[in-house]
Length: 275
Image 1 (cartoon, helix red, strand yellow):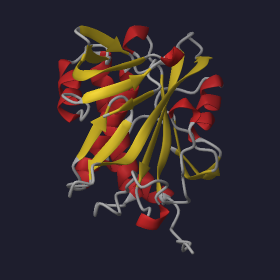
Image 2 (cartoon, helix red, strand yellow):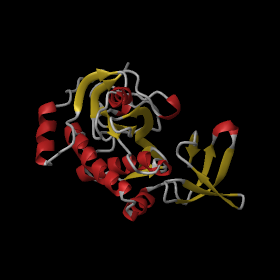
Image 3 (cartoon, rainbow, N blue to C red):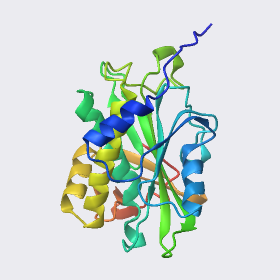
Image 4 (cartoon, rainbow, N blue to C red):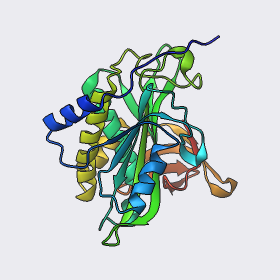
């Protein structure tokens, strides 16, 4: 029999205070007690012309989603469940594949400011922690990037970045044996501070992306656990590429050396990648 854990909802006043201290100039986050999906909420706001930086965070998602439509467990007040609106503007569509990668990097940056949990990135969208003692990698969180299909008054398109981080889930609440949480790893479960840190680092990484700053590529490569490993990538049509992941290129594509050929894989094409 599993225990029900009563947790406090997000402290909106504290979030506002922390953002004021950070001299936040983008829209204030919209905090909800419950929603079906924060990505769906932000996509709706994008259709109404919402500005870049519009953010929705919820204590609970009843229909949270991961990549390929997979369910994402989002128990009440147990994690950071948030979505952020990006208006790419003049950035070429070929570089949009960086968006889930930079969101993961920003989340990793944020977690690092609050504790010493060694978080790595599994290309293209997972936050991973080495469980040690031969237990392998455990998933701490994930990213879901979705083009909303909406445009602002100037005709600019929109991308919604969903970020989910398991914060206060106890071991018995984890959805799979391969999952973990900040609580389980001994890290900070201060969701208000985590939200603000993610927002701040997300803005910094987006600025690097807009200016094609080489530090973004360098930092992602340094944090990426996929590189140097043998990977198996499932692609549409049942095609599978197996080989060594050797690099991330300037557009955020994974470079896989397979059967003597260098294959470039985009985040949008990959169905599943194992390392």
